[in-house]
Length: 137
Image (cartoon, rainbow, N blue to C red; front, side):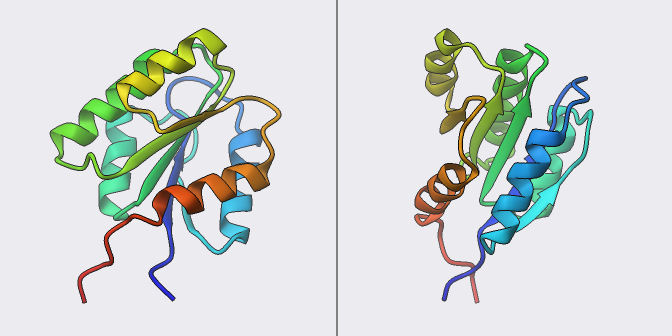
């Protein structure tokens, strides 16, 4: 079997509601993935730094504060500046339907809206990280 999928899960911005992100992190961990939860109130810079340090395959952002456009965009910019565009970004939270297309255009791989099943999130992550390059031996 290949390397375990490495996921960094983060709560950017000032939003203090972390129940949903903890449920998702637990579901990914229970599915056999290696999950690092960065905790509340992370800046995009801290999130990208953690993703790079942890050699993450994918970053999941949970945003309920309404600042999703700014926060997702900044994380994607920082990944590009670090030549780490191969790290996919997905997210969830209270994100209006009309913003999802814009986020997709920016490079967000997937947005899960409230009520998404954890099994669907786990399946999506598995399907979208299978293209990851194997680690150098």
